[in-house]
Image 1 (cartoon, rainbow, N blue to C red):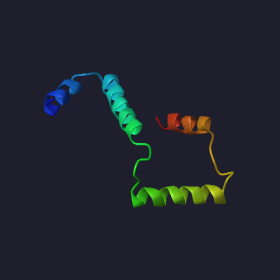
Image 2: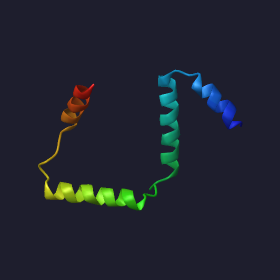
Image 3: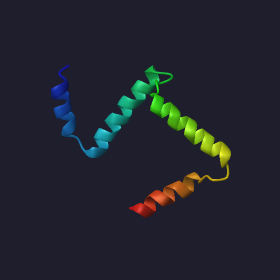
Image 4: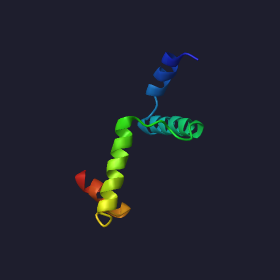
Length: 74
């Protein structure tokens, strides 16, 4: 397989089709890797978020509130 040829073909697709390809690639990677390796920064950020949640368990937004906030920014 020639990666340049493949990429040139992908570029001709619609944005929706390219997004589906990206999602399929990410899903295939996730299926092969049970526990992705996290960087030290990612681990620290996760720990920070867990600590923040445990210190403030009521300071959260529902999924509906998050979606509404994102839609309001458009």
